[in-house]
Length: 132
Image (cartoon, rainbow, N blue to C red; front, side, top):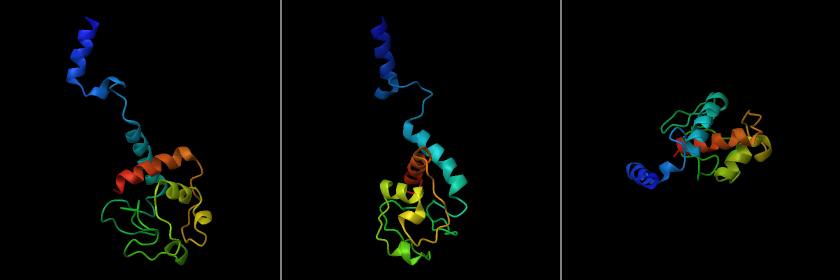
């Protein structure tokens, strides 16, 4: 009887649905939701991330991953950022967000950084999702 019930249940749900309780969101969804909150409180005063979003004190971040630092059209970057040659990926973004002034000396970005991995990691997950 138990195996028949399991077989019936697996036919009505996706194969991985039995691996976690129904009320659990996938890890990436939880991380990006947390990251969205962090972006709103720590980044949105100076940056937008949606496609076509305006530049503010900092550049719009849509499409930032895979792009060379200092190359978003229409934003006036410091010579330090524009000449850095940094290509944004998870690793470089994490180092930048940890300590911008140490990562690219001479940046005009006025931000102390986010020292804790548990804050940077979900922020980067959100940024990757929101800027794709």
